Length: 327
Image (cartoon, rainbow, N blue to C red):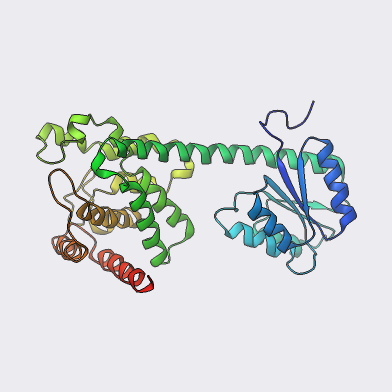
C-alpha cells in the first residue's frame, strides 16, 4: 500500500542538488513510494520551479554553486507565500555551528549524507503530514473569509466593502512598516471584522440608522459573535482583537468593552480608520457618499472628538497622498 494513499493526489517534492546522480537517486527513491518528484540543480532554478508550481516539500543540498541551501531556505521562509512549505537541508557537515545556521535560516529538518532510504522516507512522511494539517488550517481561514463576504452580500450597499478594507488596512500596515504577520492579520481582518453580523436579523442589519435601543443591543453583539466563531483557529489569533475591538473609541464610548485610547490594540485602531473612510465614501440608503477631501475633514474632526486615533488618521491620509503621487 502506498505511503501517500490518504492524499487525493501525490505529494509534490522538490529535490535541489547540483550533483545529478544524487538528485536522480533521491528522485527514484521517492517516486517508488508514490510521490511526484521534480529536481533543480541550483537555488535559482529551484526558485523558478517554486514560482511555477509550489511543492509540498523541499529537500535541498547545502553547498551548491551560486545561492546556497541556507540562502534558498531563508528567502523562501521570508516570503509569506512560501514560508509554510517544509524545507529540509541535506548536508555532509557535522559542525554544530553549521546546523545552527540552518536553524536560523528557518529549516524544518536536517538529513545527513549519505542519506539512508529509510530515514529519508520517514522524515518526508512526517513533514508531509504536518503540511496537510497546515493546508487544512489555510482552507478553514479561506472558508471564514468567504463567510465574511456572504455576510457583506446581505446588504447590497456594502458590495466590495470587505475587499477594500482588506487592501487599505494591509497597505496602511506596510506604510507603517509593521511586521508581515500584522499585515496578514489586517488583510484577514478586513474580511472577517463583521463576520458576527451573520447572527443579526436582516430587518436590523438592513435598517441602517434609527435602530431602537433593543435592536442596537443586538447589533452591538456582533463583534463578540465574530470573535467566538474565529476563536478555535489559532492561525487567527492576531485577527481576534480586530474583530472584537474595531468599534471601540478612543474616548471609551465604543463597544463591546468601552476601551480607551492605548487600551485599544493597534490593529483594531488601524482597521477602524480605513472602515470609517470607506463608510464615508460609500452611499447608503440613509446617506450619500462624500468626497475624499470632505472625508478627510470629517475624520480629523472625529479624531478631535475622541472617536478615532488622530495619529493613525494622519498616517492613513499621508499614505493615500503618497499613492496618489505614485499613480
